[in-house]
Length: 553
Picture 1 (spheres, rainbow, N blue to C red):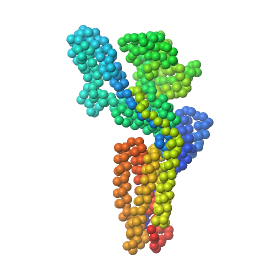
Picture 2 (cartoon, rainbow, N blue to C red):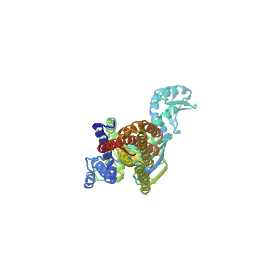
Picture 3 (cartoon, rainbow, N blue to C red):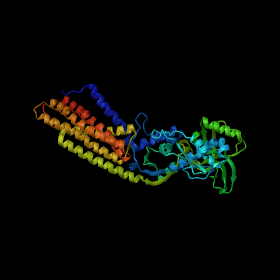
Picture 4 (cartoon, rainbow, N blue to C red):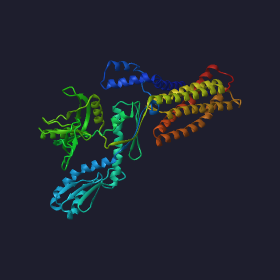
């Protein structure tokens, strides 16, 4: 008969209460957001009276997770960037030259002298003085090949060795290029995400588009230029030996060297050894600080390997200058006074507090493997985002009010039970969105509106089934019981097919499509729960209290 065990009733109401409590912070969005941001700054070490006051705006014993607003609701920056994959090929081949040189030197009696030749970034050219023995040089070069580190190219080598008669030509194989592209894009996405997260922005969207493009959307930031300044720099940090300093940027640096300008704006150029002693990849931490004269600086610390290489080099070159190079510019070129064994140091230069903070963020996040070229940039103002919120709010209110009126007029008291469950349903949706940290977009609001209609549809199926059972002269209790029992299969089937569609949209789509799929999928779960369990509990509790002889649905 029409009975629900006490433990099941407690469990149902407890789930409703938990969902509504999780959704509660969204009703005080600005206050909770200020409190969360202040707590994050306090954890980072910025303890001020203002941060302490803001942190107290929301009680610590209540949940503080919010539904993050997407770019179309909050405003922010939209960027589309192209990754310069050719730079990675060039860097890879430049790094291969010392290994090839060392392998060919023992063969000089056979192949003669070896000399690196100017070439494009897609190949490495080495001229030998005895080209009649080119076959031996090619054999040595092929011996340096390694298997491609990918599933698709596991049986192929990473380099191809050819000759035009006088020059030995080394290039990357097609399989290695494809594997390099995959690694470069994955590394670029991760580093861009780290840089944006370090800056404290909320829920950015960072996705790969096509073979060599990255879509970046950052809600709540003032302009696209801010994002470009943060993520556009490669932040390639190197420590290189200084050969000499010159005032002429056209000076021939010589083989194995390069000439780079000074970052201080003066007409100074440095001739440096191309191979660095240590790179930014060996950094484990970088923090903004001040030097002994009170000027902004950046403190850094190497890992074990970097500290050993840095310590050995400084010990062997006391009295010689070495250059700290960032993105092809010499920040400073101090003279080594003593061996630096601790693995830590300080970067000083002509920059202010903001620049030192941004530099520390870039160094902590790591250097980009290749440069970015921005193809598209847009700044979406908060006014546009507010218009979207208002439009979505109006749509939800109109749909919600129309459904409430329709259900109350069509089904009377049972319609009021359905309306109460519908209100709980919307609260549960926002509770789940807050719990999983989802981002709400304008298509996501459309998913909520659609969910409201689907939740009513489940109640309509139940109530119409109860009407049918009442016409067969069954008692009220039996009619209600059979109504829920026989409508269950139709409700489950309809919602499962829609849920599968939501899963496909989430798996195959991106951006706004995923936002729609998330709210639709979570809404289906909550609507089935409220239609099958919550309304039934309310109906049973009312029936046990009133014990009506007849009912009208």
